[in-house]
Length: 306
Ligand code: GLN
Image (cartoon, rainbow, N blue to C red):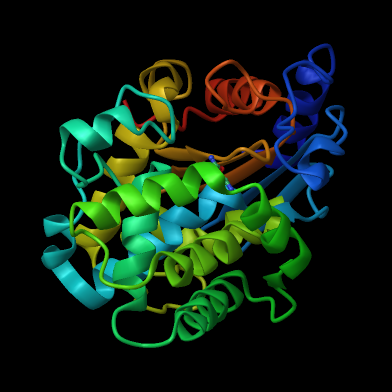
């Protein structure tokens, strides 16, 4: 398959849509993003990477980080993690507090903000929060094969300053007894992990192991078990796009995770991984142009899991 030709065609196909959607505005550095930006990168089993557009430009990974913290927390806690967070799609906006009250502080799934706050808390465990952040950064550097990956600390600071909503969620979870660490320690890790700067190329490479049952097909590293890898993919498919997850499965047909910065990371089991970035979001908070691009990619490659 000529992946470069396919990606070039995807870029041509989405050109009419570029600039559409609404850029997140709750912090200045996201509000400044140019909605015309568009990048896409595909990583394959043999280590080949195909890219088009702004695929080497870095952006904050935001909630794409939830996928990787979930992986690390599952490694540490194994099934005990599920005592603290559920596995059902939410059908609600990413940071709904209503559902959290009904379900008494146990978030619906790890792909929502409250779910990720709980996963961060569990990942910290009994050590300093900074150690958990270092572990995550080390993991991403190794997976992406790039030691230059790091946290944009200025961005993490402005996330925290604009963070009244997440602070409310975290206190609410704590009120139900589902946080073991102080709220500010947990949110410190949460904001820092949302503020990791990566490009489409790096993200597609970092997620490649999820397309090959937990083993990095290039390095041979057993990153996680087959069953955990499949379960992370199941959660991405059913919960990875807030209350847009059903529509994304219908249109694209791949496990994926979208973020407020306009990136979507998706996994095609046995085939490869892909990351697309374009900052304009649809009404549910998924990259508008990014989702169209993935639809086109899947049509051209036959990558749907269905
Ligand atoms: N920093 C964002 C938040 O929690 C990340 C969420 C996202 O990408 N949806 O508010």
